[in-house]
Amino acid sequence: MNLQQFLLILRARLWLALMVFGLVVVGAVVVSLLLPKQYTGEVVLTVDAKPVDPINGLAAPNVMAPDYMATQAQIITSHNTALNVVDALGLDKLPETREAFVADTEGHGNIRDWLARSLLRSLEVEPARDSRIISLRFTAADPQFASAIANAFAQAYVKTVSDIRTNAAQQNSVFFEAQLKTLQKNLETAQRRYSDYQREQGIVASDERLDTETQRLNDLSSQVVMAQSQAYDARSRARGDNAPDVLNNPLIQQLKSQLAAQQAKFDELAQKVGPNHPHYVAAKAELDATRNELNELTRQYATGLSSAASSSAARQASLASALAQQKERVLKLKGDRTELEVLQRQVENAQRAYDTTLDRYSQSMLESRAAATNISVLQAAPIPLKPSSPRLLLNLALAIFTGGLLGIGCALVAELLDRRVRSARDIEHALDLPVLAELSLAPAPARKKRRWLPGRSRPANPSSLQPA
Image 1 (tube, rainbow, N blue to C red):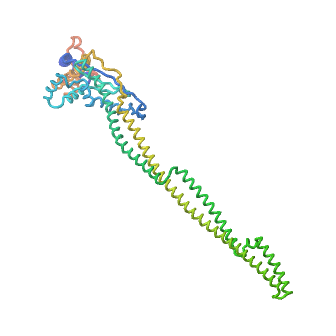
Image 2: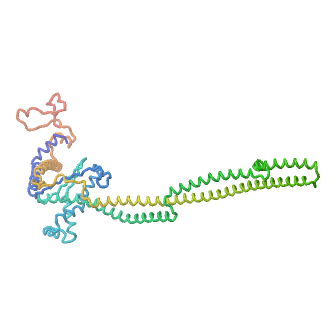
């Protein structure tokens, strides 16, 4: 179908198209005038973007995220928010509301839930794109009721968000309170074990005592080294009568010189007199006395050196034993100190866990008592002065557009049901034969002229045309 055929069909079925068009337009106007007027109360809310939460100091959620704004819209249209509106306005206590509930449900169910579902059907929430604005609209037949319900939904939304936050904070505070009792017991147990161990081991200042014992150990080590040196020296000097200290003793050397002189005198006297001579006997007695005195003195000196060597060895052994005992004492102190440090770390860890939990508990308590939210009412819903529906001009424009389409459609359907020949092209399609000429009623002078179809060659002799 080309444009010419479409126009020919539309001209032939013009009255049908106009009738359908008129019926649609008139019907839309009548329906728009008969429908009850509806008023819409609109509240504009804004969600504040706080970079840091003022209570816990943590980063606030990104309010520009699409899922965050969609979540806020779902909270507004939630059943719990609608129940808050019902409770805030006391709608379930109104007599007309109870009558409508009984008429609709025959008294079955809960009137609060029924009212909440009824209010949500007339509620529309639209978050602004790429913005922190949320538009809340409620439509009702009464303009004051529409405004009151829209404002009530805004307040209920703020209350619901605040309740969600405070309820979560209250649950956290209960949990942290129970944990605080356990952590406090653990801290007291750790402190008691630390104190008992410190008292049992007699540790007052572990660092000072360990330093003192360590210094004493170092001193004993030095003394042991010196005693070892002295004992070695004493053993090297204690060699009996031939010890250098014995031989080099001035008194012994003097006695030796005296003994040598007496021996020389005695030998000289022995050559002159016999053994029974009084001088010989006296010289021999004097010589024996000097020799005995030298031997006794040598023996005493040798015995003294041996005693000194024994004393040095005994002192070395005593110092070595004291050093070993001091080592054990220092090792024990180090072990006690290590155990005390372990107990001290346990006390510190328990204290740290208790302090952290106490901070979280205090924070949860503050959050559970804080009713502030990041939601503000940018524009409350005023009482609407003009109805939002029905919109007569909009419905009329839609009716004109729809009626025009339906009129054209009905004309085309009628043409398909009752096909007529409207042009030469219809004959060509119907008979599958070419059209050589078109005859139409025209004024007398014009009838003498033949009308040739465009696009066809004119015959050389028009009178030679014969009917087919």
